[in-house]
Image (cartoon, rainbow, N blue to C red; front, side, top):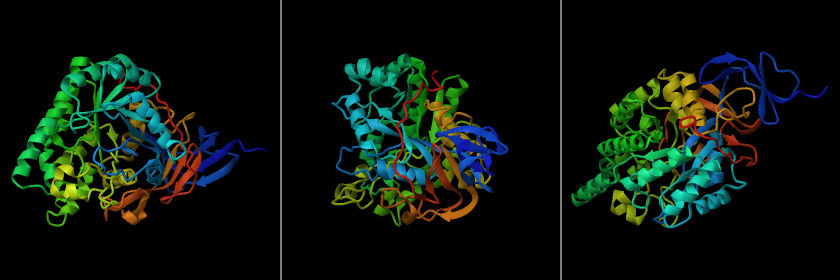
Length: 472
């Protein structure tokens, strides 16, 4: 008698965004084909007794193999980045194909596919970054790419080489409305940051800590409100990404009360770090390890973020994995001669794709702040829904891809750089004690990582996406 399934996962507690229950899962040809009290006749069996059986994590905001304008080198390519993601319980990641000013958006996407081909341990799908919204891009390239399945793109309200003017933002938002694309917005006020940076440098306050002062929450609040106003004017849904604290969060809540379609994402750094971490040991350069934008805020901001994670203000919990070396070779890391002269030259970004899920589970589920169902919604189901991957991804259901993470809710561990798989030479979460850990990551029915070690070949596939549920 031949086996009816390729794989059976037995004895675990299945958790979805809505409920939890005991059942076996049967997998055939990479898809879930049976959920029942007992799956019979599988070629391979996995004993999940005592474990939670969760949809594989979807990290909807990561930066991999991304070019920089200042000579620093991103620490993760697709091989190391997706290896790290798989070890951390993720089965899909969504990095960014970034348009470089003066170049074709379509050419940038083609080049990004070449970087990823044959190197991915998880499935991947690309957001676009629009930095140069020329008539050619807005009239031809961007609409065509959306129709080809690149149904989300990001715009920036700061950074010299990425910032769009208000007029450009409105034009891009208008294209998104017409083409049913979802816009992600990095909301920080560029002029306010430039002003604060100049004032701080004039006062001799140039240590990494002052990055947090220059990128003040006021500037994030103002830009969030401005982005919402542009979205209201053009009648388009948006996602405000990496929200750091109470002020911008309240702008999102204000918009929602008025019926506007504004979605929100937050990240591990805003529940696990504060701006005091940027002080380093004694206002020294060690603080550069924590420089990201927006920066971590204070303990009140952490409390606010938890409120938003509980009450639904935040639908997404992503890593914003943007890894750089701290040391690097020949001045290519955060610790380089120019960065030593001022915080404004320190590369913005921290690693976190492998630690995203353990941090939220430990700080949220294990400490009673959120339910495990809410954890699944924030880290897998909602990203799939918002970014056009559901129900193929983000669900444990008949017909879904068998992307599954087995989770030991009682396992205790400590985050250490030497245990991680990413390319960076440090983790900002060094020494953080964790309760609850992914012990097995299964991609389309095949085990790709076990106990923090990747044990399969790079068989991840590119996923074309449909229209977001936010705009359908």
